Image 1 (tube, one colour):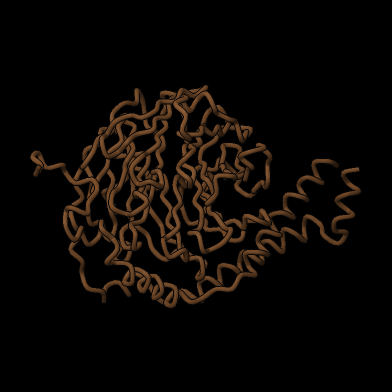
Image 2 (cartoon, chains in turn orange, red; image 1 turned 90 degrees about the horizontal axis):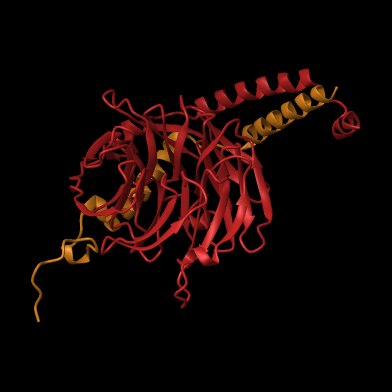
Length: 70
Length: 356
């Protein structure tokens, strides 16, 4: 009996989970993709690993030059 | 007694009716998702201009662990890195000078997860000890971090992932027991438990700050689950991976997330379209993905593989644009520095490397 109850409880949890998933609102992929592209375009210039550093000085991990100006 | 509670909870539901409803819901979900699948990301991306991707160069190598490096995390100061290893050690590195600042000995080997607190004044770590222990750093005292350690969380199996959810006061963990859990750091009290994975949880990521209280987890049940932190419920599930999900990471926009899996594929799931929208894979890549990470704009998706390489994918064109070679064993972790100027990789070859 206990096992049947636990199976029922497990299945209830699974079904409740699916009810939650089924009830969410969705948007078309075309809209979602357009938003991803827009976000990337808006932030491209801040992305040092994408567009590079405006000068090596702003790269904190640049190679240290071997001589320094006193 | 148990039967009484079950009946009281819901008298009209039977196992058969629940199973039938579950099947109907699954079918409805599939239909709904398919109906809105009106365009492929790669088709949209074809119309974009091509970008010249810069070459990332190796800038630092952090050597000091005696065995596989399993996890790492950047300090918010953009300079320090915490790493954890199979050798049972947690090391705090100064990444600028490539030197060790602290070495912490853990109670067990296989320290699978470590994380910096948002303040930068504390790190958390754990693994095969089934626990998360926090170590306060600095604070004006010269004491070693280990002398002020505090155990916060305990899972019934290994602890595989941990993070601080935008506060030093709480820790979110994932474990081999298939659960995620939110803990109060001060009291060690369990605040919320998250149960829906059918196997070990391998990875966690927090939604970008302004998105509120949601996080994502990935596990050995091949599932990627999105959770509501307050209710403790899984609100979305993505189950297209064919093998263990080792890594999950929100896109910087917060509207989508990437995952990496033992099926050697990275996938992009859009939260609002509620489905997979892109796949990053090559026939020549047959080894698993251990870790994924985004660049600041979300154009580049970095991935660390078991074939000893890390690479960058153009997330829009779904093409590989750069391969980082140098590690001599599998790459266990890739992570962007907080300001996005460098990428760190951790490897089973005992080293960490910084690329920029």
